[in-house]
Image (cartoon, rainbow over all chains, first blue to last red; front, side, top):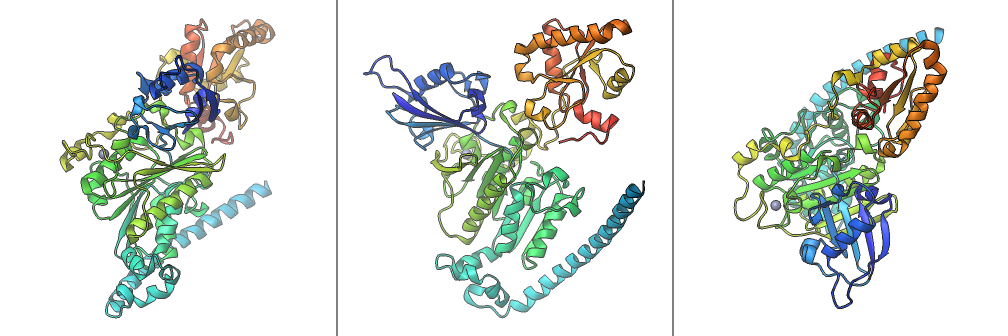
Length: 99
Length: 453
Ligand SMILES: [Zn+2]
């Protein structure tokens, strides 16, 4: 499944300072839909190069990270259970505090 | 010599002129306040459309000419008040526009003083105000733009103990602060008082903006119920910030505050604006609504005034309300050395290797002579370089002096150097010591001309 993943607010530093990743996430089974939970595991394995605790906590993202699926807060689409579709854009952004 | 005498004469003269200027500014401020009062009394009887005084009609004519804004919008501005918390990178441009737009009252809270390294982004301040409170500087700038808006100064840090009293006097609050505990505290206080919060943030080349606690929208805690780990909180003083980035977010904060105060348009509630300056992209995303389970604004047990005042925001977020840099103490005294002691070792020609563990872009700004740059993040992979540097130094200078080669580690402020030494000890470099206070202490104690940043 082809997806666009974007990292911002400093999270890009965890994946070689690259903000936009066009990826092809392989599915075990075409029948089985890809969820955000599956994607997080995939991202942890394939994109996060350092300090994984700065991205994940338990089986979800760490506090202070907003997850957007097609420009929409994942809280509105079922969080970890959100079903992903071909060409979806998923953004992971760390909240900023500076000014 | 003649040049330096001339230099100090000019500096003295400028200081004395600046002092006179300050006194004149103060006198002008008192006169302006009196004039404002007299004008308000005079004009109260003679008003025009929507009770706007005559002198406002010409001044704000370009607002009045906007069909969607008009006299109603301007009259709403005149009757409302905005509090800006933080007169820094976000607050500077926000305050300039808010002072200009025709509010009734504009409050400014900040406990900090103006510093030279603020001026590239905190555009409300100028060189003449270096060392003076940001609130004084910002208030003077606002008054010189518009003598008809009441400007209120709060030269103090906003805390849970004074926030209710200060914020209750305003209709709209702007969060232009630079740290996590302040953000939770200001949002909670807005929930307790039922005030809309225009929240902006900027670090590096990115910015974020949204309006909290407005028209049934979420509060800060609805979005971020658990504070992030302190290591995830980047600060401008560590990560850098391109001046115009907070400028853009600050301007947008002013815009949202004007819209809410004037009761026009669609404020950015339930949505968040994300600015990525490097790739010139702005994205506006839909965020969750108010959470019924929220600990601040939720249905079950909304936050009370008493709970708010007692809440410890610093321990909740594990970080201080003011942005004084962290001072770690990881190492025992005998694993550390002061910059003065280190300087003596250099003078005594003792053999040593100095490892500078700052990131390479920091090292390029300024570094000590005879130092080896191995950033903390790559220390693990580059231990052999330290071993060979130690060996080389021992062969060149150690033998003739008959002493062993020492290993010192330095960074910017003395935190990363301790982390590095801790690691080096574990890896068998048992004599490694860190320079207490880092390069900042070198400037402070040894060489005042060594640049700080
Ligand atoms: Zn809430």
